[in-house]
Length: 279
Image: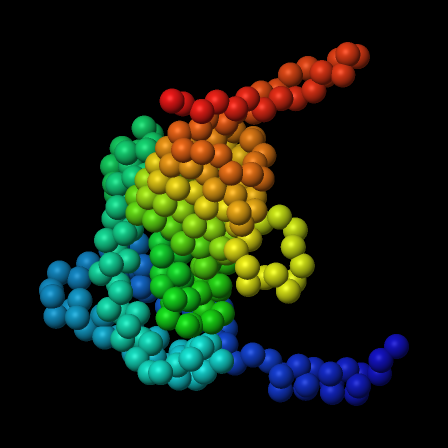
């Protein structure tokens, strides 16, 4: 059993060797402030003067610069101007999120207004975190994107890795239990329900850099509880994947894949998968 003095030495080394990445609370505050800047529905305040918006914009830019200045470990291949590039992307991030709001509003009959989607839908909140985290990752910012994504995961039950590429007009309905892996590629106008997993098959650690998660082409609907796995798995454009389907191979465009449960009796009848391709 270690004596207390040895334990103190162990803690000292842990402090010396600890990553310089900022504490999660600082990153989360920055994310929340950016979200309030993009969508005032999340804020107590209304910025009814253009100068105040510009001032708020500059404040957030400075806050981000301080985070990065004191945490160089969080920047990969920093050639300067990361914060400038990120803030230049905010108009495009907001445009994509407005399209996501529209997709969720049109995709869920229960949504009465777009404001309701912004304020209450976990799918939108998780997407907002993802769009911001993904852009930071593309700029070579490390750890911070993952902190943002994991915070959104805790808040919503929706786990989207910041490395995932997601097209326009993405709709997550309900959302709890959705998992989207790092190398997933999702096209435009895709809709997923709660419990959907776009994940990887078990691979060795040295294969971490390979594409391990599926590709979902445009205009696909994936119902609750479906699991689609593997980096070579492609769900063709316009396909419908039914609830609880387990897929580890590609399907052509306009496929309809359903899981059909049946009773197992003494004759050995088992569960079946129904496969149909539309002409």
